[in-house]
Length: 429
Image 1 (cartoon, rainbow, N blue to C red):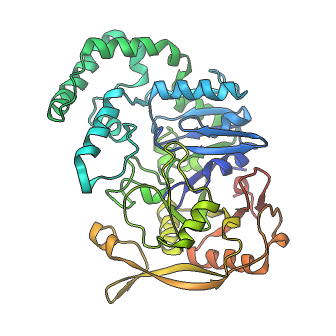
Image 2: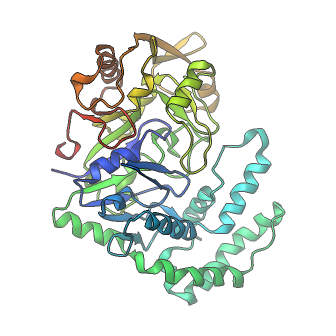
Image 3: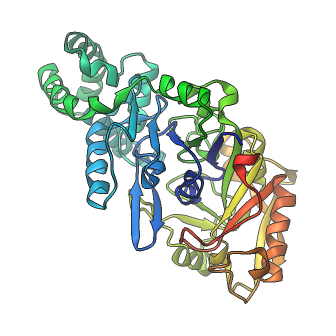
């Protein structure tokens, strides 16, 4: 038995929360290692629906849950989320939740900057959520971020605020945003400090002890490989590394600590916001996928763009993140379609390629090469064993395995926790 890292292998919204909840039943610790409250996920347990943005999914199971140093955390959003899930009956206390002391804060001035930049970008907008995640990461790498450890040191906090505002005040003036005073920001942080500091610990030490004690750790990624700031469809990406390698950096464990890499892949493709999408369907089939799949953002409510399964994209993610197995989600959304299509390559003019290029112009120019495959009229919804699937659905899954170069470890057939067909146990590698 070993650790497992779960990441999205498309553009996010693949159903990671559901899969992590399934795996968390056997894990001892669940770690969130990157992103912020810009990426939500939903877990359905019986009649209860839990929506998370910052909390690791392990809190549903009462497992030790760690928000790692790779996450940028809006403390007010985190406190709101804690209170909301408490009203749903979940226990959240410092014995359950650990917040890395070296994680950076997302502040109101980050949200202001995010929104103002997008408003000014016009046709060049990236499509951010406006939650301030990008500006918070900018301050982190610019070595001017406020970190949670700073909240316990008011004297140092004052100095850090001066450095932070020396950068932000000129930006705010140029964007015609009101000035933020050091006194107001200090008061705001000192007010929130006693509410969050009980959760603040050196997360790397907690995880190091857990690994030495032989406890199973589940590393939970947000967003997905094709939104990675280095390897995704830049600049239409998030502001953090979303690939499996970030599990180590973003939580403070060694490179081998992440264990088995499990990619989450939707049985079709979706994307939120701006950016290239070679397999996008702007027709009735695309609308059908969106309606049947309930394709709206957990946090933002934004409508997701829908399209056919892109094997080129997923194969690239498999290589970049070292994915060893995948969970194919939402197979039931494809029920009733006579013919399905899978993208097996791209054309750029007369040239045929088998990868998504890095350049923005080339990404926008690619057109998909499709392979048609027979659909099925029988229902996959609610299936819990391989023999319950229509023969054409089995053929579809097997063809995806061949094209992406990774084994399908499990298939989900509805939003319900129990509706999953398991072929391989990720914890056993």
